[in-house]
Structure formats: C-alpha cells, structure tokens
Image (cartoon, rainbow, N blue to C red; front, side, top):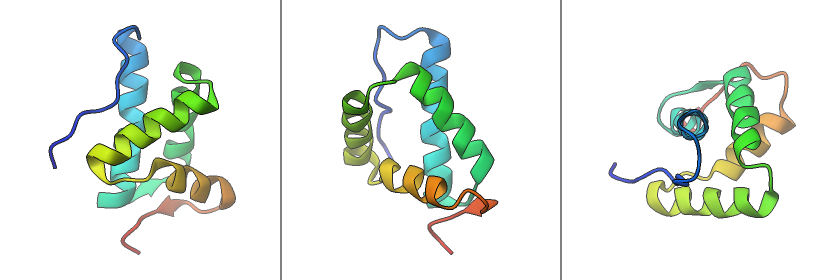
Length: 91
C-alpha cells in the first residue's frame, strides 16, 4: 500500500519517529497482530507529540484517508480491553 504518514515538518526527528512508530502499530493491528502494551506505549509517545484532541483527530483522519486504517477504533479497542494481550483485525 502506498501512502505517507502525516508528519509535521516542525517536529523533531524523535517526535517524527514516535508518530511513525504509533502508526506502525496501527498497521500491525490491521495486517498482523499487535501487542496491547506496545500499542498503549506507542500511543502514549504519540500523545506527547500531539497532545490536543483536535490535532489528533486531524492526523488520524489524514492517516485513514491514505491507508484506510482507523486509528481511533484501534486505540478505543485497546483502552476498552486493557487486559487483552494481543489485538488483530483478522481475528
């Protein structure tokens, strides 16, 4: 699948890597499976870069337009099922 990650050029390299890592976990959910704790940690790092809800929504929407992957749905699923070890759209 060909798409770009929603990256802000004003972010530092570490911030860009945190956002990319988070979206890699979202991709893992849809393409394979992802460990719940890894996704929670990646989302926590993402929120340090993108603390605002409106900015988060815009970035999630931009990522979904390119990839077809709904980040909000995955984050909500993990938050609602904190004891689940692995998550996958394929199960």
